[in-house]
Length: 325
Ligand code: G3H
Ligand code: 13P
Ligand code: ZN
Image (cartoon, rainbow, N blue to C red; front, side):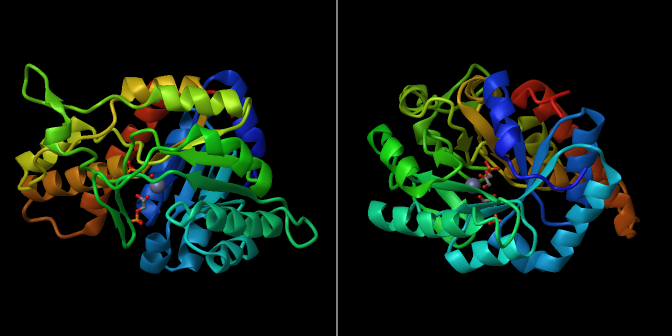
C-alpha cells in the first residue's frame, strides 16, 4: 500500500470513536517495531519525523526507512513532519514525498500563526505540484521540551475554544492540535502539581475535557490532535531505574484519559517518550545482564522488542485502532 495522507484515516477514526497513533521515528529499529506491530494488528499508523530526527538520521535515511517499512507491510501509513517550525521545512518535506506536515506556529501571536499556517496549507493543498498533503496546526502551547524549545511549567496555555472556528476557517487546516493539559517528555508534571496514590506513585491532574468538548462543539466532525500523550509507562521506568538509570518522578498521562479522548474528537495521539523508555529499558537491562555483549544487534533486538510490545499495547488498549486498516 503506498503512503497515504491522513484525511480518510481521520474521517474513519472520528466516526469510529478511535484514534490513530502517531509515533516518532529516528532509526531503523523503531520504524520496524512500529510498523510490524501495526501490521500484525491491522491498524493504520502515522510515522512522524521531527526536526531533531532529520538532523540525527538525515532526511534521506528516514525517508528510505519508511519506504522500506511500507514495502514490508500492508497497512495505510502516513509520513508526517512533526512540529515543522517554518514554511521552508514544510515545503522541503512536501517536495520529498511526505504525505502530511505540521506547521507549529503556536508560540507566535495569533495573527502570525494564522498567516504562516495559511501559507503552508496553500502549498500543501496545491495538487498541481504534488498529491494533496494534509496539514496539522496548533493553538495553545504545551509545557515540556520539543527540540530546542523548552516551555516552562506555568508558561504553557490552554487552547481558547473561542478561537478555533476562526482559526480553522481562515487557515483551511486539516487537523488541529490543542492544549488541554498534556505536555512533552517524560516529566509531564512536577510532583507539586500531582497527588500521590497509596503506593506513593504520582497522580497527575486530569486533562481538561471541558475544553475538548467545547472545541468539538465549535468544530463538529473536525479531527483534533493530542501532543505530549505518552503515559510514561511505569513498568519501563522501573526497569530503567533497576538497571542503573535515574528517572525519579517521571510521570505521564493516564491511559484511561487518553482512551476517553480517542473516543471523542481526538483522531491523532502523539507518542514518542514511551518508545524512548522502551528502547532505554531494553538496552540498560541487556547490558546489566550481559556485560560481555558488544554486538549492537543483541541489545537493539531487546530495544526493538520492547517498542513492538508498547505499540501493540497502545493500539489495543489506548487508541482502539486494531482492525481498522
Ligand atoms: O514533540 C517532540 C517529540 O517528542 C520529538 O522530540 O524533537 O527531540 O525529536 P525531538
Ligand atoms: P510525548 O513526549 O508525550 O511522547 O509526546 C510526543 C509528541 O507530542 C511528539 O510531537
Ligand atoms: Zn509534539
